[in-house]
Image 1 (cartoon, rainbow, N blue to C red):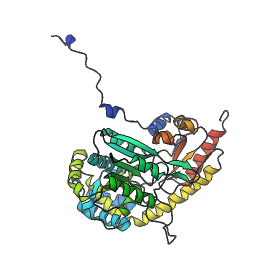
Image 2: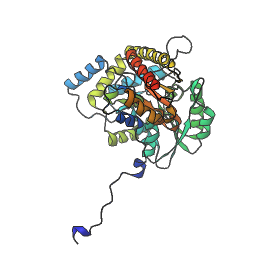
Image 3: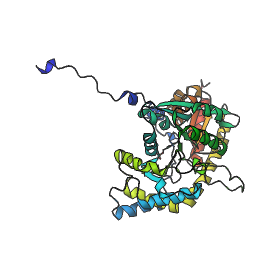
Image 4: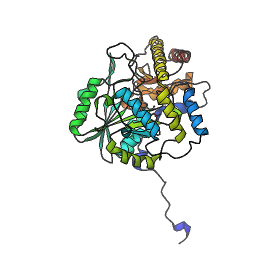
Length: 405
Ligand SMILES: Cc1ncc(COP(=O)(O)O)c(C=O)c1O
């Protein structure tokens, strides 16, 4: 048989579940901006400031001392102990046996999903939502049902009865992100209690993405002092219940590029979690974990100041956008984004591409966060106010251009 007789190989492709994943619409907008000079980017969820020096110094010191080896799958014991103390201080007693270090929040979400869902499982998620939470279970072959927050006079609100109705006894997992990206919505303690009780009754896992828990702008209940953290499922649930809490160093200590996060989960899961870490990443980088200890142990003042700065930026941008005709914007209680309606946003992807092409303004389309986000755009306000003002000027220029609606 000659080569010419061999069957023509089909085009190599990934699994159907992977090919069906949504690609990032934020990236699509960024691509539309290629070649445009002087773009003001507010589309990604990170600050324009570098990680504080005391954390960078801790990493340099660790590197110089030779922290370049593999570590335990679940993280180095001093970091797990530091995290247990930190989580305990915010949410009540937590032991090292309930804490695992991960390669940032997104890896923690993947690990959490791999722990509890498989092909054909039913997963419920509350949207609009950072797409990773919806797409990750789909990689595992799960079926994701979404429940939409409603938008009204009081901003984004959850209809908790609607969520309970979706949490049928055959549901395997609820994925919930509060404070929420993109809306800034924060789940109330009462709603958390109601949902936790319901999930307890039906044996449904709760995967709580609390990476923005420290970016919370409400006062504490009684004293009027700023609250240190948003309400957390960890405040209500025992550590050995079916609750997996995902967190990250990215937001509270400006460590997005370091890829460090953690999971709080029942001790009974830890042995299996260690296996999954082994087969995903084996461990988080050693010197990065050392830097994480510095963040947790010395970073409290930094985080509290960061929150005050972010709150001021949020209020500044809300005021500035409120002067733009047709913009409907409210100050949300958490995270680092404004998610607002504006003229043209009913086709938000096209609008955001036009904004970047025509005036160099980079914001994220609401549709990137699920169909329920259509009609809105997301603007990350974690930057100085002069840059926010420059962005608002560009928005006004765009809306005032000849032929604009
Ligand atoms: C809701 C939410 N969860 C998790 C993450 C993951 O962050 P990282 O992987 O940087 O820890 C992000 C990042 O923007 C996010 O918005």
